Length: 254
Image (cartoon, rainbow, N blue to C red; front, top):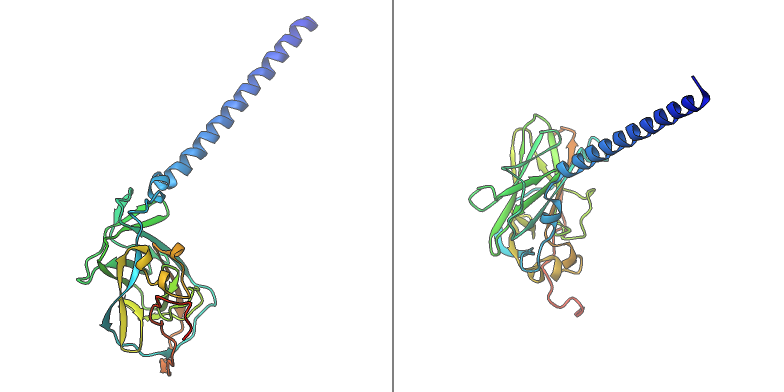
């Protein structure tokens, strides 16, 4: 074989290897793109919420709801699960589900109306959405599928549902006993009452009319779950730790 023929064959082999490598990278890139697309195929459309579709949660009617503060201990300083749900007056696209399974199925989380009926929830990849209706009251419902005891810390529009402060996942929450159901009906006002969660325009929301909130955080519900140790709970004085009423004129201190 002449040197010229040898070089020609070598160049052809190198070109073939180059095209093979390019084709493989193109296929891998396409596969990666497909995975990303499949993860949340409707993400762009679902996140595009017009001003007419945006909603917040109002400080609603006074509803009787009795609680006792108890002293229990978390197994860990970190929650075992965290989840959030976006809501708006919008027809979200995705898979219809009845509830959100959190903590590997240990707890089911849903948004229900006053009759206990689940509001339409949509799953798109790892994102969850609820179609809300202005003027409709709602509750947060947790179902414990285990023999363990959990603590649920919840926020609505960026505000803690217990104390009305800026929400933190490490705040105190509600106890969810073994094989039990917990319903959070509103912002806690006292040991005996809550202001019911009611969908409304963002400027009517509790977040927009509270010194601790922001209208920019309307349209989202958050929750985290802590596992608790199971000694007998000891009742303690709650003091004045609940959510203050909204203030239409927060600039006036007197």
